[in-house]
Amino acid sequence: MARAAVLGRLTWQVATVESARTETATARTLALDVPDWPGHLPGQHVDVRLTAADGYSTQRSYSIANASEPGRVELTVQRVADGEVSPYLAELAEPGDQFELRGPIGGYFTWSPVEPAPVLLVAGGSGIVPLMAMIRTRSVTGSRAPFRLIYSSRGPDDVIYATELDRLAAADGAAGELEISYVYTRSIPAGWPSPPGRLDSTALAVAGWPPDREPLAFVCGPTGFVEAVSGLLVEQGHAPNRIKTERFGPTGGAR
Amino acid sequence: MSVISRGFTGRGRSDPSLPPGQYLTEDFPVLSAGPTPRVDTDRWELTVITEAGARYSWSWSDLLALPAESVTVDLHCVTKWSKLGTHWAGVSVDTLLAEVETAADFVLVRSYGGYTTNLPLADLLDGQAWIAYRYDGEPLEPEHGGPVRLLVPHLYLWKSAKWLRAIELRHDDEPGFWESLGYHNYGDPWLEQRYWGD
Image (cartoon, rainbow over all chains, first blue to last red; front, side, top):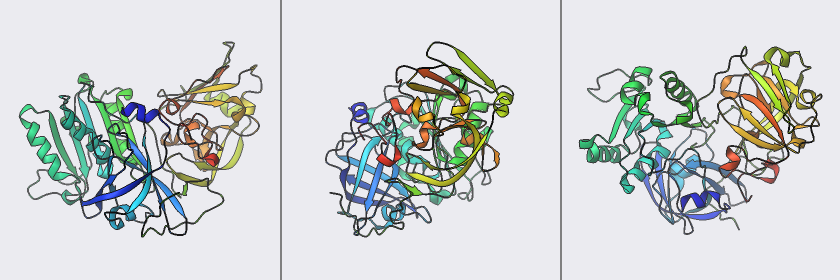
């Protein structure tokens, strides 16, 4: 179903905000009612089009946060300082408000629950969003693919989906199927064993998979983060064609 | 038929130098599907393969020996950003293919790292495309496709393949990487040909 959705013609659809959920001080999740939404693959994104009262319109791309559901799309949007679209989505839009979207878009940065290989997810900041769609899909489909998530944030208050991630990891903890490692670059929780710092090669090797397990790696975050992490993975012996990346810059929206 | 988004005012207003649905950016975002390949210029090589199987190759020094052009062009990425007035230097594809015998209609461009993209050959000729190796007066950075990328600024930027390795001249039109994954086969930003069916 979702594969067919990728191949079809992508028409603009009206999305109605059903609910808004605050995730962090600067990020919010909008649950959208999109009646003709066909479902999607985790990792795909949508194009959003906002139109002002005078007819001016602008578009951006945002990753989809939820597991596939007909008629429903969730977007988690981090407010970008200076952004034109993200402040509307992350702060202004209220239940009942409408905008347009089309999708699902992107057939490469996607994970399939029939894939048994170990999965390494590496998120920088709001780069967690498409990876969360994969984690949620794994959970709802009952996939037993072992997942490891390494999630780099500025500080503990910047972690999106913290409660849900803890719950999913605890539910799976006995089997060690979903392991989550946090990295903090600016500030750390009380009692955290290491000082704030960037994800380095050692931490990546310890919290990730050894190359001989041939994991499928998904790396998403700001350009510098993705460049650094994907470079380290290649240096550690992971095959470049097993590493899929999504980069976003300060003006690149949620991609 | 578009719906008005209550409370959205927007910042820019329609700019005639921007194709529909694009917004202006001043920085240079990077979009790639995988790790950035690192290709040393001493082992870099560009190969052109004709529809008849003839092969032509250029080393890094061969490429630098060809007459170069400096061009200032606008870039339009399918992810919505446009960057105007970017400065590049490289060899015109007309110059590169001047001695190549071909009756092909299409090309499949191949990159180090495995990326591919397809275009009509006509879109690479008549001063429309370059084999670019300098950006803004400096050697082209690997993140942006260095040492050498294709530059076809009149189409969406995914057609301007980074880490250029080979150009296959073909009678048939073989879809490339993104073209096989839902993105438009031709990709004219002024017609907003982003995805299949656009």
